[in-house]
Length: 192
Image 1 (spheres, rainbow, N blue to C red):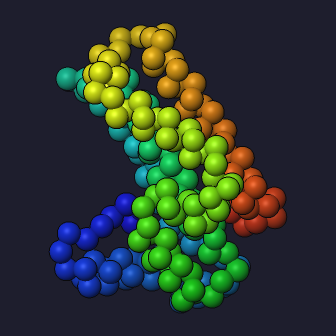
Image 2: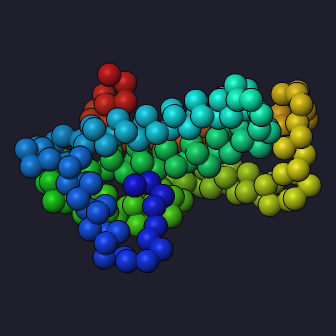
């Protein structure tokens, strides 16, 4: 749902995605309600990625390089998660068909474009800058190779990116708080 794209049979892809959204957003859903089952699955998906990271890097028979996976989890996977959370949040106080249509349009967009559409480019400024820093680093083959071979969390390059990742998380939280006020139903949904 969050990053799917059709390779062929666009009509079939859109039909199946709409059917899934119609299941998540049932006939009896009121305008005020959020698609809580969809939200729950988005949250579970992000948590599963985190658990999968731990298994692949620490628990498996052949542990995979943890440094680069950790940095990707902090940036790209977290951004994907946030885009799902923000997409569901913006469906509050809308009729069922509008909720479905809005999510279809949101999920058609690349993740960063989705966030810009929801929050506005200006509000996204620090998030965009931080993410651009991350992409710039990972674009460098030497840096990617270095991160694949990291042995310690004290590694200077790893620490630089990890600290930037913590800042990225704080900026996403600020964006969440600025976009959805304290009375918005998404606040209650993610807390309780």
